[in-house]
Amino acid sequence: MIGFLSGKLHAKQPPMLLIDVNGVGYEVEAPMSTFYALGEAGSQVTVVTHMHVREDAMLLFGFATELERSLFRELVKVNGIGAKMAIGILSAMTVNEFVGLVEIADTTALTKIPGVGKKTAERLVIEMRDRLKGWQGEAWSGLTASTTASSATAAIQGANVSTAIQALIALGYKSAQAEKMVQAVPEGLSTEETIRKALQSIKL
Image (cartoon, rainbow, N blue to C red):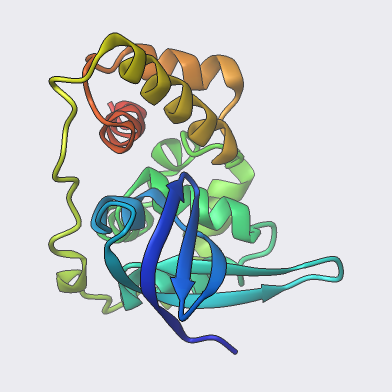
């Protein structure tokens, strides 16, 4: 099993990362929280990983913190929660927010996550409540996006919007919903900041 990867970030295309480790490129799927925490392409990064083996593929998921990976591993144990939905949950909210929603049994907020219906939200609350008892959130500190594109040209802004929409679709949102979420975000932001603010809008 691959426990972590440490190398040069070759490319970022939400929700995929390409990490060059001594000349070998690893494709890693990651939640948006991890994208916010990493630097730009070309920077040195370290992500903890989880390998997911299917009959037709071996997938590698990467996380900025052990806490994120731990929650991912707990989520995929829940009946009806696959790896893609778990990544969607971690992209839509922080670990602390998810733990809080489970503690207060806020199924309405959970159903705002793509693919999570009422029954799935109720199952998440029931099955995760005991597993998350005693969780601490200090490991989540510092995961913030640091760059914006206030001086970007209209062409770059358009590319950022298009990439943000495609990323949201990859996370499970419908095309029309993704477009509406991005349209509500101020112009001139980087792709990652656009995605972050679009995801924040579903909590309102």
